[in-house]
Length: 351
Image (cartoon, rainbow, N blue to C red; front, top):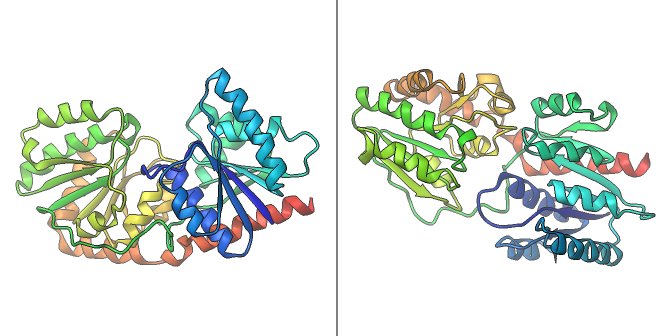
């Protein structure tokens, strides 16, 4: 089968949409399919090529002149590659594939990673629509996606070709709390900083490590500098292989206000890290509805601090959640994700 994936870029920047696409494409290629990726480019091009996946440069910058060029280049690559399936992971790719299908026989699969964005409405153009969690599927149904073309495929990271063996051991000052997230308002970073103020009062040796970058970083750094614990709050920026930090942490925290699934939670589980996360959207599904991590209400620094303190103070609780995090991980393999996705393709081709 000829499978063409489309995304805005393949940069190694911690973007969960890109990470899911890269893992899926590589796994499909290993199954013997002819796979290509069209994007604006990035560091993962080399990884794709190592996995016998062709990369087509397709700049989808949303400017009139550039979009005209993108339309021209898209039609050219489709004529050359002759896809059976076009799998669009972002809005622009979904619209390109639909508007310029014409008499081409390929089927379109759209993949909804962030349903809270307004652009998710455009993902309805797919012949099949994949949601990354039941929560996303419910949202897309309410937005008019036909039930018969909607499928849920939970994300996975086990066996990802993006991961590399740790070349160094990370030493964190502790007790240590780690988060890995884009520094956006919706990720709840300000809540975490406020919660750490409470945690530090009862556990003065604790340290908070924030891995990630984003447009709201200056605001969060300003908030941290106002804290009595500012010397114990560390902004480390984006790290391409955060698993080593997760493995060294006493607690991993994801305090999001909105989160379609939380791919990073599976990575934290793989690292055997006790987890505290907010009970929103697809997060409960990634944590077996609270069995594999402690769930707290969003936008509640007090309750977030209480859960973190419970983890830090009680070694038995930490060990319980550490063991639970590691259980059932085989389900979250990229091979399973690829197989389920390929079945959706086959249904489309038959239908």
